[in-house]
Image (cartoon, rainbow, N blue to C red; front, side):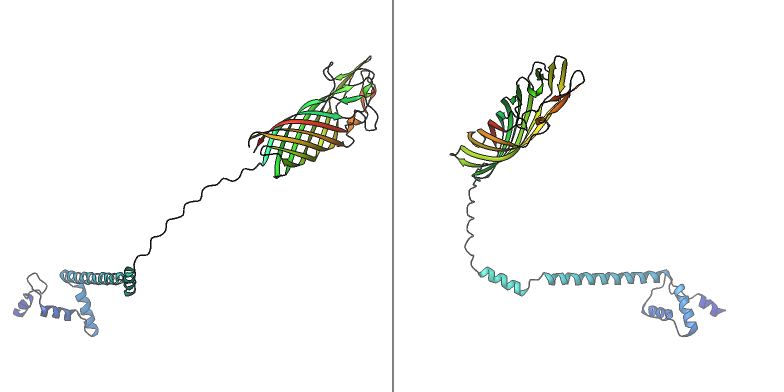
Length: 335
C-alpha cells in the first residue's frame, strides 16, 4: 500500500516542474529505441504514440535549423564560384598590360570628300503627237480597168503618230490618218441615168470615209541640236467605207446600200522636225506617198438595188484606189 503511494506520487519527467538534463535525455533516447523481440517493438510503438507535444516541437525546430544551415552552405558555395569566375585571368591581364605599354598609333585619316552628283545625259526616246493631214486618193477605174466616172476629191483629215528612237540614226514610228472624201460623179455614174445624192441629205454629195494605219522605219539624220530629217518606208492598212446613196428616177427614188473596200499600202515618206521648246515640244512636216495593193472588196464590183417599182436594178462598181498622197503637219511631245 505504501509502495503503491510512493510510485504514484513520483513526478512526471515531462511535467512543467521537471528540468531535463543530459541523463534524462539519454534515458529518454534509450527508452525510445526499440529493443529486440516483440516486446521491444510494442514498447517503441507505444512510446511513439504517447510522445509529448514538447518533444515533437523540439524535433521540428532541429529540422528547421538543419534546413537553414544547408541553404546557407549552398548560397556560400554559389557566391564563391561567381567570385572565382569574375577574377581576371593572368593571360588577359598580361595582354592588357602589353597594350597599355604600347604607344598610341597615328590618328585615322579623314574620309575623302563625296564625289559630285552627275546627271545622266539627256536622250530623246519617245515622241507622241497629233497631225492635220491633207489626203489625196487616186483611182477612177474599177477592178476590170473600166472607167467608172467617179473620183475621190481631196480632203482634210486628222491623224496621230508615235515615234521611238531605236538608235541615234534610226527611228520606228506608228501612224493613223482619217479623212472623209466627197465623190465627184459624172452623168451615168454607177450605171444610173438619174442624179445620185447622199442619203439622207438630198442636196449633198455622196461621201466615203477612209482610214489608214501602219508602221514605218525611218533612217534619221540630225541637223544640229534641234532639227532632224528622215526618210521612211513601211507597211499599212487602208479601209474605204462608201455611205448610202439615193438615186432619183422618173419612176421614183431608191437607195443604194453601203459598200466597202480594203487595201494594203506601202508608204514611202520624207520628213523634217524642229524642237520649238527644247526637249519638250517639236513641230514636224512629213510628206508620204503610198502604193495600194489589193482588189478592194464589194465596192469595186457590181451590185444590185431594188427601185421604187420593186424591180431589181444593177448598180455599177465604185473606183478601185491605186495610190494615195498624204501631207501632215503635227506637234509632238518629247518623252
